[in-house]
Length: 175
Ligand SMILES: Cc1cc2nc3c(=O)[nH]c(=O)nc-3n(C[C@H](O)[C@H](O)[C@H](O)COP(=O)(O)O)c2cc1C
Image (cartoon, rainbow, N blue to C red):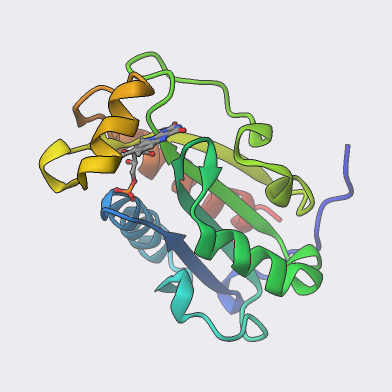
């Protein structure tokens, strides 16, 4: 087991919830997480990852990305590379949004999204079922999704997502 990060008194903590998306379903997951943390009295900022220039002002982060062909979106992989040294020093929770294993939920295995996430030693990593709306995809994406066996539909389980955010808020309250 890894050493837990020092978390400090939660009411003084500033959280960054940042996400990478191609078609918006991960943005709505991130928004739901941010709203839930805010409703627990936490100070939360929500940002699309390419708009984050610095993470110095944040005490803790929740980072999440859509999964495309088994990888996190490039902008999020770049973000982790760019800020790796300071990310390692802060508590980080991670989530993936994808469809492998849908409708059965898949294993929460960070290996699936590559070594970039493993280096961070996150407090937790969760995989949420995403959404696939073929009409919004390019021709190339549609055929890739079809080849990968992805099913059309919106499988996001909002209660599961809110529950995860609540468990983070509780963890901080009790630290
Ligand atoms: C071209 C393509 C490739 C995908 N590859 C994967 C994959 O490897 N693993 C997975 O779990 N989901 C995969 N998905 C499903 C997406 O992760 C899912 O649709 C997700 O909700 C998209 O998030 P976004 O709307 O935030 O971009 C793929 C979807 C598309 C269209």
